[in-house]
Length: 312
Ligand SMILES: NC(=O)c1ccc[n+]([C@@H]2O[C@H](COP(=O)([O-])OP(=O)(O)OC[C@H]3O[C@@H](n4cnc5c(N)ncnc54)[C@H](O)[C@@H]3O)[C@@H](O)[C@H]2O)c1
Image (tube, rainbow, N blue to C red; front, side, top):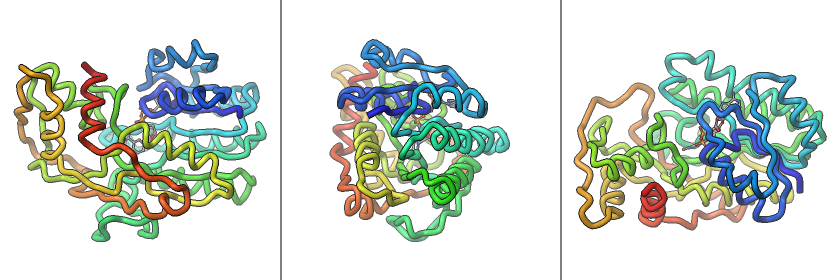
């Protein structure tokens, strides 16, 4: 199968590229390397993947790359995903996540692609809801501009299915973690805290550490993408996660448990909680289990240990 991965030099995208190559697909990657790194694709490029550096906001460049690659399957992961940046520059956030997604959908359709898997967010799309765990039937009411632009992108995917006949499947992923996530970045608390464990610095906990999220290991997210690509008739959107939410303090315990002898346990500093961040996100993953046959294989302790080991 010919596959194209937008955002394929990023954290999740590069793991997906490796998995597609491993199952024998031909893989083309487009990415502007704004947060992704070409080093993430080192093995993939050696294995025959192609790479185009382009900005998905540039519709002509996206169209040309898709025409050259002729993908049957598209995995759309390129995004502006910094929640805080989305709040200070929501127009930029929308230009990447909404206009960029429209460019990708149009190019997928024009180049003859059959299906597009859209990476959306289970953590940011529902907003403050009392329904826990949250099923897909809860109407999205995002608090952050990032959640809003991702909801808008989902709606354009549904539109492309109706108007263009492009099959689209949206996956609303929980908080993803694992090797290659940037420990110096703005997103990814497990990567950041694991980095602090190794450097011996104090991590900052925003709030009192009781905020809860569904933390999912990256290989499980890759598996969900492959299942969505192979589903006989496209459905969704699907919540994708472990179905278990954990607090920040529980994360710290899991990271401390992965410390090597002689490494000091994390000694967090506590700071005021930040705008746009929810107290709890917990995903009901029943639909993905029933319709995709998906269930997360990696528990938090196993995934955290693998993440710390890779960083070390
Ligand atoms: N990491 C998570 O916890 C999480 C959770 C839910 C959904 N997602 C979604 O999964 C996708 C991948 O996230 P990730 O964690 O791998 O982040 P990432 O930042 O590592 O990956 C995003 C990739 O997109 C590229 N990119 C950004 N803007 C671009 C543009 N204008 N043109 C071309 N490429 C561009 C970046 O360089 C990067 O390689 C995103 O769509 C994100 O919204 C992530």
